[in-house]
Amino acid sequence: MGAAMITSRFAPSPTGRLHLGHAFSAIRAHDLARGRGGTFLLRIEDIDGTRSRPEHVETIMADLAWLGLTWDGPVVFQSDRLEVYAAALARLRGEGLFYPCFCTRAEIAEAMSAPHGATAIYPGTCRGVDARDRMGEPHCWRLDMAAAVARTGQQVWNDAGETIRAVPEEQGDVVLARKDAPASYHLAVTIDDAAQGVTDVVRGRDLFEVTHVHRLLQALLDLPTPRYHHHELLAGPDGERLAKRHGAPTLASLREGGMDGRALADDLRRGQLPKGAFRT
Image (cartoon, rainbow, N blue to C red; front, side, top):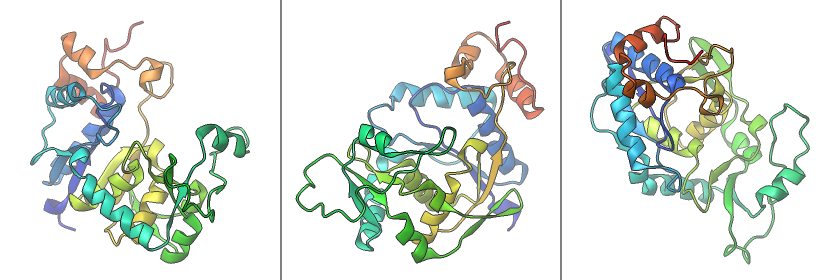
């Protein structure tokens, strides 16, 4: 594939302010494209209408500009693409790969018996249940994982040059739509990456496991598979992964405090935390 055909993206959710971990990932995606004469896109994943805020969209754009990152073309908003997701859901439903799940969160938690530290897998309580008389009740739509895998067969993807065998079965019957969200992250991100011609997905190692599901959806929906680059997560001075719940400083707070955004970006490129970003 020619260098000019490289397309990467940064796709934050406007449910809060960006922090240094977000910046680290955005810089890596931006530099991969720019370093090869390619295209860098910005997509706003605002499909969660109850938590997304317009003010966070403005802050995201200001933060990226402060870091010296530029994107190509118009910004894509997932909230403008609900009909596209609905069409994909209808296709999967028509192929018998979906089923409604009426379980409450409490019921699901009680049914799950995964050992401590293991990924909790939905036990398939509603799979095969005749739900024709219950469709007026709150429910989500789950992918029948066994049927989906039987349909596609074995799939693989390229991750930083390594061939990875997809094992989506380990994720169980994942949710692809809820009553309060017309499409899950899994479905929307898979469809959007294909629609935007993304050739290289750069994101944190914490999303490696869900890529198994995304590879399956690509096969089910006849979508191309990009190359993936799952990078290690940025850690704070205490060695913990940088996250809002661990007190990671937001880019907006650093920007408003007078820090040089381009210098910060260069520090992150070298794998260094910017001086003065953390209180000691």
